[in-house]
Each structure stands twice: as structure tokens, then as C-alpha cells.
Length: 426
Image 1 (cartoon, rainbow, N blue to C red):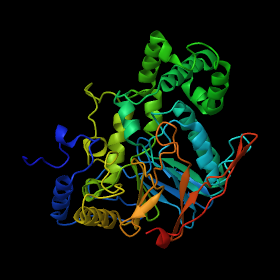
Image 2 (image 1 turned 135 degrees about the vertical axis):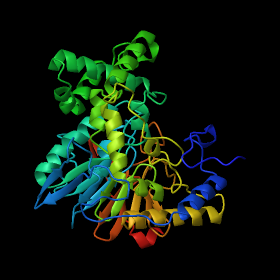
Image 3 (image 1 turned 90 degrees about the horizontal axis):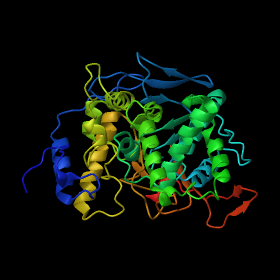
Image 4 (image 1 turned 90 degrees about the vertical axis):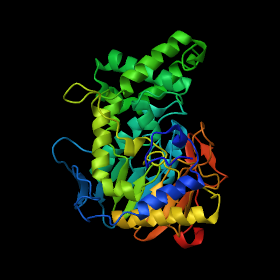
């Protein structure tokens, strides 16, 4: 086979393909030939590629967002001595999302959606969208919790995954009929109840959507528009209006990056490789955010798609290099772990947390605990597994798991978890 350049757009490297042995070798060879990787600590830039530095730091018990020029998604978070919890792919399943947040100890179980995490830092690693019917409701809930957490000295961070970038690009292949209907209902709510103020509608949608859903439950073609092609078309138009570049929900997604460093841990949806760090994580976040916020550049031309972040089998949101539950042979794992080690050294972090690839065995780590894979397929549109949450405190890492036997009484989920420290799961 002819040599295909790194980050090629060739169909041979379609994002949905499993990374082959030869492709791993190509990535490994290219990255190992790099002479050096520039990295800085603190509030300096991570990587050598330039770009706007956006840092989220804590001043006492109150978080402050440092912005330079136009608002940028945070890339570096300084949160010393804070508990960090990370949640994997949610894919439009509001019920499982609530369970996961309660398991993480950051959401009340009284139905009032109160932040109970105190100074905890919550990171959701992407793929809120697609495969489920309550995507906008989940985005609304996370935004609500972010405001509450801010007032308590905590923080909520989201990372954009491949399904967020697909929707901004107009790729709706994985949207459910209910997802189209939710977009239509959200637009109607915005216009009818809020006079076109989408921010007001978005701020309460996590509760309003469920009320509307209950009202239309027995209405033919209501929340099951698959029987009504005209309603489907209207829902698709509404979704396009919301998520196209420059649209209101695309701008909401633009507030979040595709890579985030919290203390000495790195978070991404698919994976981070040395070339990404060298290019500059702030620069990548800036380019993705700019693409989401602006359909056209200042010359009236379509905004360039940030290929290194969202296209190609080895892009940040699509990479599965570190997420294989089994490798084709031992050499593939050795090379993948070597690439991971180089990326971590370049970014000056001790570990990486990713989602994207459902782990049938539950959240786990590999490469001597340097990468944690936390997508457990909790959505009903994926594996419908029970939620699992990663907790990081100081140097200890453990997985919080719901027990198989749980009680559900008066809409309150009562579960318990077992914990595994880093050494036990390797």
C-alpha cells in the first residue's frame, strides 16, 4: 500500500475504522522522529504551536475565568487539592446522566437538580449528542450545574467529542427521531414562551423539556415523529438552525474545548498524541471554538475546519489508539503506550482520561495506569450499562460503580459503589 501522510484525508483512514497494526507503526515512527517537544507549566502555553492561552484558576474558593481577547474555552485548569470526577459519554440519555451525576456526588437526588459537589471539579469528556432523545436537556442541565458549582467554589467542564463536531458539521446520521423532535420543541419553546430568547429557553430546558414531553406523550406524532415525515423534516430544520456553525447551540458548544488539562491530568474525548501537543492544545481549542462560532471568516469564506482536532483517524476526537480493550499483537500495545508516554511528557502531565470507545468491561486503565478509558456505554442508545465515574484525589485514582442491585423509589436512585485504586486495576 502506498504511504499515506500523517493526518491524511484518505478514505483508507476513515474515522470509524479500527486503527490497524500498520497505521500504529506509521504514527509511532513519525512521532518518534520528532526531535523535541516544547511544553510549559502553570499558566503558560502547553505545546509549541502558539495561540491564545485560556486558563481557569481558583482564587480562594471562587473560580475565575481568565480571558484574552474573545472568550476562549479553558485549556489549563489550576485546581490544587480539589477532588476531580470525570464522566464518560452520555449520548442523550437523561436518566443515566442523572444517575452518573448522583453517583459522582455532585447532584442532589431530590429532583431539584442542586449542585452538591462543593469544591469538586467535574469533567464530562464529550459525546452528549446523538443516539438519545434528551441531548439539549443534558446540555442545559450541565450549564445549570456549572453556574451552581461556580457559586460553591467548584467547577463543571465539558469537552467536545466527535458527535458534537459532527452535528456542527451538519452530520445528523446518528440523531434519533426523538432527538429531532427535541430540537423542534426547543425552537418552539424559545419562540412561544421566551420571545426568541434562546438563552432563557436553554437555561430551563432541562426541566421544561420533560414537562413538554409528558404533555405530548400520548399525542400521535408527538415524541415519535418517525411516523410523520413532515414533522421529521421540521425537526431536522430546527436542529440545523441550532447546531450549524454560528447557531445558538453551536456557540454554546464553542465555550468548551477538545482538550483540557486539570492539574497534572489531561482530558480528551478520543486521545492526545505528541503531534497534538506540539501543535498547541490552546491553539487547537481556539481553532475548534472559532469554527463553531463563525460560519464564515472575516473575508466571507467558510471557516476552515480544524482537521487535526476533528477529522482523521488520529484526530483528538476520533482517535481510538489508547482505547482498544485488546490489541492485535503485543507490539501494537508497546507502540501505543510509547506514544502515550511521549504525549504526557510533552504536556507535562501524569495521565490521560478519554471516552469515545465503549469499554465492555467497565472503566479501566492501561499503559501502567497512565490512560483511563471511561466510556462505559451507559446510554440506552449504546450499551445501556450502569454508570461509572472516575474519581481523582491527590495521587489516588478510583472507579465509582453502581451496584447491580439498586433500588428506585419515588424517582430517587439509591445505589452504592465499590472502589478500585490505581494499582488494583492495572
